[in-house]
Figure 1 (cartoon, helix red, strand yellow):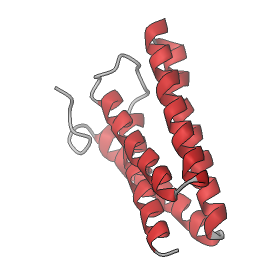
Figure 2 (figure 1 turned 60 degrees about the horizontal axis):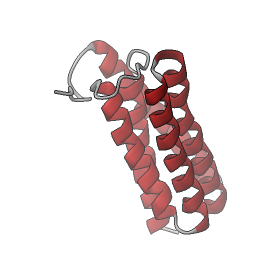
Figure 3 (figure 1 turned 90 degrees about the vertical axis):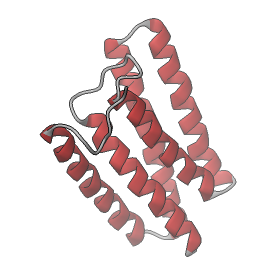
Figure 4 (figure 1 turned 90 degrees about the horizontal axis):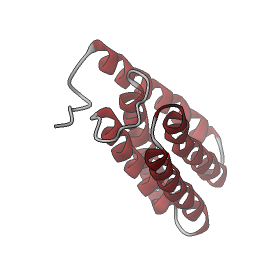
Length: 140
């Protein structure tokens, strides 16, 4: 059974802290930008995050696993684009769903291996940024 992101080793605790700090920096930059530019930045970062596991898959996994990573990355890239074209709520959904994708890697449900605490770091970052998009949407 997959382990919790909030329990476990010091690596996970360190990764959780780093994810929160990185999200704080992202939010600070987002708040310094006009709202539309902030959405564009956050969409770009989601598309970038989507490709990270593709890279891990290419380095580590079978062809089937790499195909799965590509398909899911394309889903997140589409959500990022649709978040700009249709509604920022789709962008927020993309970030929150990506946190779930991280959890599947953290719990070793998927065979693609990611370095150390990366899935925990990324999951925390994704949830905080996804919630930030929702707050930004609510107040704009």
